[in-house]
Image (cartoon, rainbow, N blue to C red; front, side):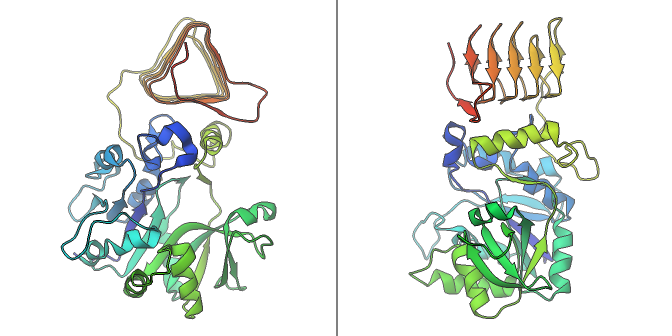
Length: 375
């Protein structure tokens, strides 16, 4: 059935900077904000934006992610003429099996899937960012400017611009130059890695790129520069809401803390733009006689008999009597023993902290990842 626009979410990255959190799961499947996972955000944005067909391109440690997104029911994308489709690399009759060689190649290997829906436009997304975005507004901007490609950009502090791919535009917002992590940036408009393409044009560009032995098969390194060199109409779409790339332990911790201290910018209770997820069958929270919760985000199934201050505590966590969890993120199914003290840490799934153990340093700027049981 013909679709005006479908979405393809790139969700195959290793996420090595998240250390042990991605040793056995793909980065988009990492837990965030209690009951959520990172991939809930782009999928919910698609559902809220009226995009009915979403392909999720998986690769690294994909079993858990595949089972989580299959069907699309958590996000309301399981009705007639809608769906979430898991798209791992696969062997085809006329080619050998090959992993996704880059962001563009991941789309190239799924041209047949996209063609089956005959879309006019294709939205390319990353599966590892925390944000809320109305893609329908971005598409309207794309149409208004008769663009061949529209790229979402985010103003960043000028002193940080050299860390990003920078889009230089004219006074109307048309992109005239792309610089990858420039030492001396000319603007502060950072690419968010969110693209809308006219499908017929992108299809041709992908097929040409696939035949180029010198290509990285990447949107930022190859497809976008080629379009600029060919004089295509590339337009910027400025986004000014909350956005966070949670690619490191520190940035993941910061995004969780933002739920507590910048909650108006990332309101997970906003019913007008819900972030959907898989609800666990867990008992309600229980706060014991010694429990004390201060400015914290506590998910269902938790048993709190100690003090939790400025922290995000995920599903089915038990915190013992006289324990202190301060400025920390505790992922699901952990047990914090009586009298234990945690400061500025992320505790990985299922970890046990022994009674009276002390983990983390309240005076350190670094965030410690606790990925092994502490005795």
